[in-house]
Image (cartoon, rainbow, N blue to C red; front, side, top):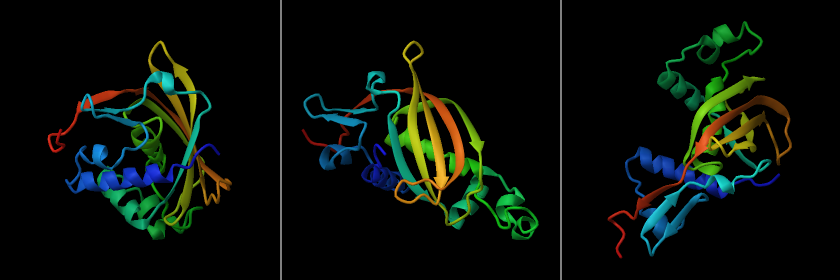
Amino acid sequence: MDSLPSESTTFWREYGQRVIRGEFDFSIWPRHGVPPGVTVDPQRRIITIGRPLAHFEVGKKVYFKRTFTDEERLSHAAESWDHNPFHLAPEFCAETRFRKPIMHGLLVAAMVCHFGGDIYPGPAYLATSMHFDFLDAVYPGDTVLAEGRVEEIDTGRHRVKFAITCWKDGDNGIPKIKVLEGYVVGVPMQVEIPFPETISS
């Protein structure tokens, strides 16, 4: 296992919660440290978000874990307008092989967004296409280990193909049940923004 970026994951989770509450601004980075994929140039007063294409190497792997909850199942149904009884109706699910409501497949697949938006190849990695195969159900309470890896680098089109494989009930990096395989093709970007006005010279 190359890396399990728990510190980076914690940073981005806290960042996301502050954005949702309307409390976050970029000034926290120069003052309190930056996550991977972000650099700060105090002399130029510039924050650079993202990695250059030359940074990426085929075979590079990163990992993180996430435990899914009932609250997420219900909120995703409300926000996605996906009210499929496989996710919401215990009486219906009891008559199927799943026996009880399962998490939405796209919510599990969205683990790739944490790689692309935050950890690696992100931040500032913008998807152009995605493909997923759903191999087994994920239930509320399941912990899912996601492995992301760089599969292809297209220098001509400035694209990186990033694959994802997920296992549920993984422990110490040892996979148990594979639940998802897929990939995303996207454009890694580097964006420079000026220091926020809240940072003094």
